[in-house]
Image (cartoon, rainbow, N blue to C red):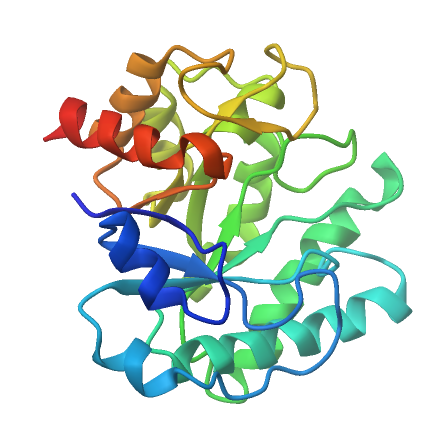
Length: 256
């Protein structure tokens, strides 16, 4: 089982991973709050040569599902550009949040917009790395908060080889029970490509996306370890920096 964490030092991602003793790292290729085009990373050769695996998280503003052309179109372009940048770093995938629409009447259109992302890219030869759709914590009109919504989304995009990233904090905050969650999501998607293993600062079904370390979060750490063991996928910790090393050590002890 390969376990790692999201990079806190973008200028030296491999150094961060080595110091932590991580098997893999997750990083951004642009400012996560920005829209700029990715530039070649100054440590590309080091990243490619390292035995530490890399996965890229897309920028936060991306909303492929949106019915607003001024958001959806740049979102499509950003996914394509960041997937290319991820491939240039040898990453095994690009994590993209499911996004949301403005009301229930737009949900079908949002799902169709996700399908169009893959259809249009397929005409260009497809994405150079798998797109890993991540479940989200809140929003009544979210594409990937509830598992019945994810099932509808997967009916539209599964045939294009979309991957899935399971975030435990998001599922907990979104009102999805973590007991048996791996089997339930695999019954929908057929796969889990990455796990974001995070505890939560808030109670179950809070719709609040606030990560916590295992020692002081509201999710039983043993339940998190069970998700990790059951998923059979690489694991990234996105927990607060002050307890990150302890979280990683707990996982190694309870999943080895």
